[in-house]
Length: 73
Image (cartoon, rainbow, N blue to C red; front, top):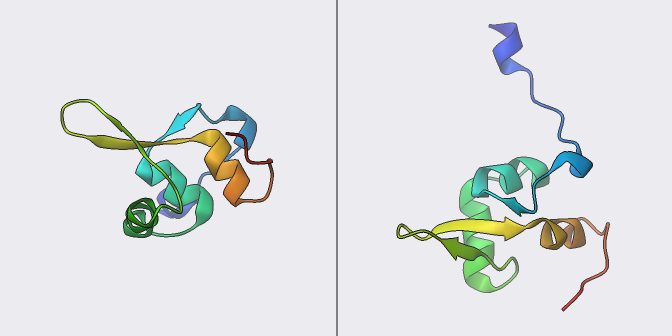
């Protein structure tokens, strides 16, 4: 049980270019609902994929939010 409670350490270098809502929430230590709200407000733009419209977020945008990368357009 104790092993299940341990959080995984996130290595930024190992992240894929597109991240899921859950991955972004874990990195930024907020809830997935917060990530979706930020997307609606334009703070964190999402890319919609597949017919369900699942959200994906660019790794660069997350690094920019963390202050680790300059914003590129």
